[in-house]
Length: 593
Image 1 (spheres, rainbow, N blue to C red):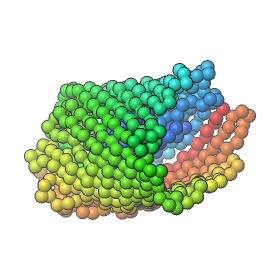
Image 2: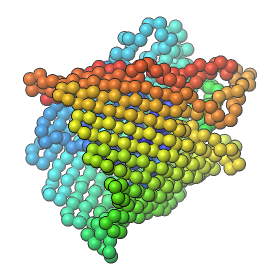
Image 3: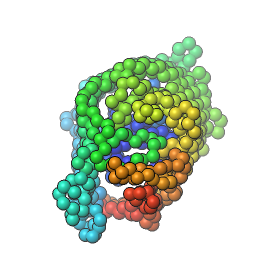
């Protein structure tokens, strides 16, 4: 999508980088409730298969008052109820394998259940050269699963139970020549897992509708490096949520009025066991790695209660103009902060099949990322968003959507001179985007381009610098063609490399027996531009009652090894390129009964 930065996030980060924001500034929701990750660690797959998704709302900014705890964008996926017709589907490929079953129980109940497991960890060790300087004791592996049950109680009430879970494991040890103690000292281990279950009900009767739900999540993050450094986090949470909507045909000269009011409480209990070096925050160049550094330690548990209420009203001012005004209130009880966030939007239908949209709003993100959770003396980060866009539908199947935006960020959490955290940072992002889609007959086309410029100032009086994830140019062009048993698809992407801070020298620390780097201006250099072509071919046929599909999916067809970053020698006198994977081929087979 336009505005989404294209690259693999480092381990320990989650989320999506949208419109020059940090990954933690945007939220990913499934059935209106937040999940910690959208993609598996290795980045080849989302944790939810496409067959389980009914809709995906990508809102890069200007979202309504019903969404909060985010200062950039929202990705909201709605899981799909099971089919009216019973079916079973199984698939296996070089990346993963799994099954999906769905159908009905009686006349009023539908079900869907799916499970996947990675296969790359089973295949990769057998095809890696025996002399490679790497030992993957556990090649990146994952499981994910989805469950949904829907039941119609009456013509007014519909209930559902949805659940989603995943577990990712990634482990690296030293080469076989090392002793057991040496191997353990060089060990790297990461395990991310969670399961979220939601029980909800929807009511609709004439002008009234309501959505109520109770959701709970159990999540765990484990990271271990060497003999001394580790972090273990467990975060169970419970979230009740309710929203009521009332529609009116005409009120005080306004037409098609929609009034909504809602409330939500998110209460969690965090258990943290941490022994790590001082966290490197956005904009801070990496320090020399000391495997014995456990400067930052914490062992304990605490409650994190957050509460929110919201209301909004939308109405047609005349047949061509529709306006929405809303107000959200967030209470972040752990840091004793209460916020009011007004938001508004106006849409105008113009001649020549044009629709204009203008929105402005205030947004907040509470301190909850990595070590931020351990502090109660810092506040939320603020964002004010101003967005203007057009939608042009010149003919059926063709849509063109340009937009421009400006984000003003304040109270950003940065490291103070004395090493503590404070809300002294500020930043801004300006950008423009274009999204065009075309669908006719067997053809589908997609073009997205975005330009973005995002900067930060860490402390008052500091110079302005580039944001760590600043990506000025991003282009994606995709197309597919389907006829008979064949479907062909291709995608080309081109995007700017990330900025980085190159070292200009080093100083030897005799006490720790290592070299400390000396850096120049922050983010003064940028990695080269990346480009690649991906293709996919599907062929389907019937084998008795089973519909079979064989597919070939090749990422980075022409083996472009782009430089994603750089690594340095122990004394920072030599530089080595860290390159992307040259090609990722996958062959798979799917059967549907």
